[in-house]
Amino acid sequence: MKTIMNKKTAANRESALAKRRTRSFFTYIMPWLIGFLGLTLFPMIFSLYLSFTDSSIGAASNFIGFENYINIFKIDPDFWKAVRNTLAYVAVFVPLSTVFNITIAMVLNQKLKGRGLYRVAFYIPSVCAGVAVTLLWGWIFNTDYGILNNFLSWFGIEGPSWLVDPKWSMWAIVIVNLWTQGNTIIIYLAGLQDIPVSLYESAQIDGATWWQKTRKITLPLLTPTIYFNVLLCLIGASQMFNQPYLLTKGLPGEETTYTYMMHAYNNAFRFGNNGYACALSWILLVAILCFTLVYQSTSKYWVNYSTES
Amino acid sequence: MTTHTKRVLTDGMRKGVSYLLLTCLALVFLIPFFWMLSTAFKTPAQLYLDPPVWIPDPITLDNFIKGWDYVDFNRYVLNTLFITIVGTLGTVVTSALVAYGFARFPSRWNGPLFTIVLATLMLPSQVTLIPAYMMYSKLGFVDTYLPLLLPAWLGGGAFNIFLLRQFIRGIPRELDEAAEIDGCGTFKIFYKILLPAMKPVLTTVGVMALIGNWNDFMGPLIYLNSESKYTIAIGLQFFNQNFGTGKMNYLMAVSILTTLPLIILFFCAQRYFVQGITMSGIKG
Image (spheres, rainbow over the protein chains, first blue to last red):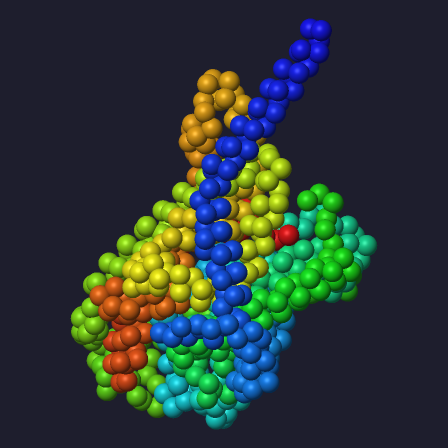
């Protein structure tokens, strides 16, 4: 009898402990929970609802079913332009910046003098990334008085109208964004430094060349870092706002820098079509979700998670 | 030539090329700042010169004074300071508390909810932007600082929660348990044991939040309508859009003044940046 009672009280104590833990758990995460429910989940659901209405600023909203979505895909000329531009930008920027970042990180990873100074030089732009430096770049890209075209003229190249010529404005934005990649470079550098030196040493003994070492040791072991950062880069690139807004005004007339984010922003805040803008946002969300799922499923083919994680 | 000599030569060559590459790139990365400096000391007449002039002659300090007073930058700085301080404080405090909850209190809700935290990292901000704006509008919060500060105080951001939780998990539970035996409640354990140990990560979170708040453009753009509430970021764009033609010298001077705090902060807190990244394991 006594042992049964002891077991029961022990079990009671355990579940009382678990209950207390759960209570404490919720107490501490309460700020996040409130924020998530109120500022993330609810707006998301509300936005889904709005996407099926013709809600606009100042007018009552009526339920219109899929009309927004149909209009987006069939009638809106700027939608496809925005999609094309955003895809083009992402397709160019993500690979380019990844190669750029990894290369610089690899060069920085050697035992060089003044490594700290170089790191500062690469990192500072990303610290200052704001309106001020974006406008600065706007001035640098100036067709007639900007230093970039001046520099090109030393080589006899007539620099284009970077921010006015649609052929070049996207590249101008790519350049500005590459310039602020400092923090990603540091991330890759940290990833590189995680690779055990002993692997390189044994490869050295086996007579491996630099390229072989890179291909067989560095890159495979860097894949987790690459995987994560490419995903973040992509999601960030699809939401790019500051540069189109500040440098090329982000108006529908813009040919190549009219991004998806600008289209949604314009519809919501310049044209006041809330329901329409919500539909646009949900299309993007679903697109990113699909991509993430596909991306995740490919990860087993090329990402090597080290055993000592 | 022995293989050894060959290797030393190729290594030497590689090092040389590396130095060259890094130096050129570093210069390219820094040139925009030099140009900013150069432009800030120019008289209007020297702005539109082709070819451009790097060292202004005459040098003038006018732009710093006149540019600053052209629009109400004193006010903009105060506003930005307010948002930055309150926002950063909120971020550090709440993300630490939430991370503590996720790290130290196992529960059947813990896993699923944390997965949601991670999922929100991948959420494009657009989806919540418009309805959040509409919500704030109904509550009368537009043209106040609340929409900018609330997210900081309600969780402080998924990434920070992730970062801090990882860190707390690295602190041995024995310390917690020892304090518990001594009669400490959960908050005291947090306050006396964990918080001091978390100082480096907290500094990193704080510094990153500080920079994010200082530079934030889209948030203030959407939510702040009255000029008296503008932040530096909006102020710069406001100046540029309405008075900017031919006044690049003013703009650059003011830009330097408003970017300088960040640069100084960077030099003081350099290791916290790098540390934060290394500690977060965002690498994988």
